[in-house]
Amino acid sequence: MTIYGCPDMSDAVLEINVTEFKATCLALFKELEARRYDKVVVTRRGRPIAQLTPAVNEVPDLYGALKGRVIIPPGVDLTEPVLEDIPEAESGEGPFF
Image (cartoon, rainbow, N blue to C red; front, side, top):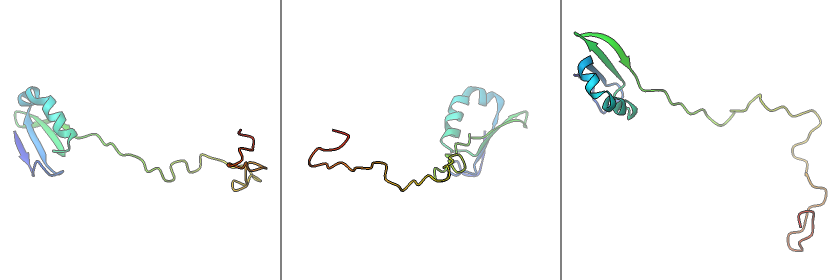
């Protein structure tokens, strides 16, 4: 097992023999998930045969996520009051009571 870079940094690369990988693969997946390594290179007889990297879990920005998906028909004023008669909360009058 050879570690290039620092294991606490995101640019750390772990090079591991296929036999060692087989014995410790679950622990290595947890370390990749925790971002302790940028990638894990699995080797056989010193030659790379596989490379593992953490999954990209990007959360899209909510601002502007629905841009272009909502169409407001012409003539609709979104600032216009919905109710003609605004109910009085103290008297209990209005369409809600």
